[in-house]
Length: 455
Ligand code: HAM
Image 1 (cartoon, rainbow, N blue to C red):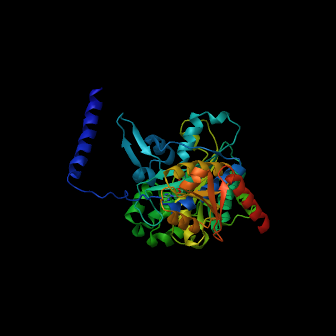
Image 2 (cartoon, rainbow, N blue to C red):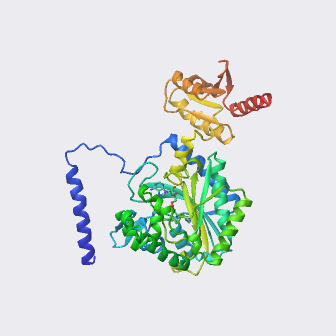
Image 3 (cartoon, helix red, strand yellow):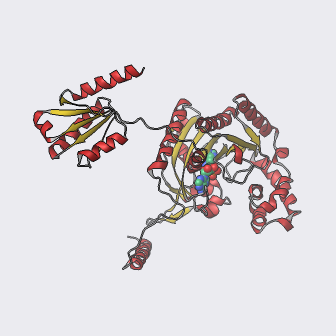
């Protein structure tokens, strides 16, 4: 092992020893890491519902799913997202691994998708390449309402087309999914033009903010020299009127940028997507050009609450990461924020189909047989439930009652010897003995008959 590595490994071991030592003799109670959350079954239902909806719309608009690793080389984000962005400056979970590589737990998905596009030669695939993803992201932010350190995003990226229709389609499907769930959303939109437009605009903006230095916060003063556009995004109440009166980027857009933006707006109008123009919207990631947008809950758009999602065009990113020039656009949505909005609006996921049959058992042999019967019923397409961990018949039938099943099949010791089961109608309590070999057919027949009567 090289000397340097031995030294490093010893250092890591010492750190672990320290943790071990500090934990000795302590009956420690473990808790979640700050800013992370368990997704318990009640919230899981919302996640699964949203996942199904995203997947359905993605496939009908011909997006293919991609998964990128949770770990990437730190430089991917430094280069892709931008050295002077909040994400890179202060929010990345980065570390040097045992092999000396600088790695980062991904804070966002777009740079990783662009890396994958280059690495797998997607340029030679039919263009544009349409991809969607769903996964965990990590940012070391100050946890508060709607802001976590580990959160989930789903996103859509279209790489390989500069057509304004691509920007519009990304916004359209974003709107379709959320409004389809019953949320009242609006798209705040702006154009930030090309690098050249922004270069010119930044100069004007810096001149303007210099005249307002006395009201600028320390943070804003720093941004003024590093990344003046970020001041426009400030939530500082004391700055809002200064921001409102600032020169607007639209006046510095090239003709091409303006034409592109007009086309996007035209398509969105045609598609009936509700939008609001936001001349100060610049977004916090460096890879954007032309269209930028955020997705807001309609009632909260003007407040300083958190956006549900954001995106835009990023024509320079693939080239910046070492690929061929590839125009692209995309969006990512915060899943926790969407779920919170659904709950707040009292929109619940559709209830799952309840089971029709419950299999109850008494005794070891019956338990074994009931496993096989359960599988036989499931394969025959019957919606079936069980509670194999419960012993008493009474407690099992109580569960069957709660589940509102139509029939319970009871396997007792006597029935097992006879090769029969007891079929209990849960509505009237009538019980019949049925040959175990015929039970699946019998149950299917009865359920079909009920369905016909209902129709
Ligand atoms: P972003 O605006 O940084 O954009 O994040 C998109 C969404 O992720 C946010 O609007 C929010 O809903 C959610 N989000 C971000 N940070 C947190 C957090 N700490 N806690 C909870 N939710 C959060 C991007 O990530 C870009 N990659 C979007 C994109 C895709 N642009 C082009 N393609």
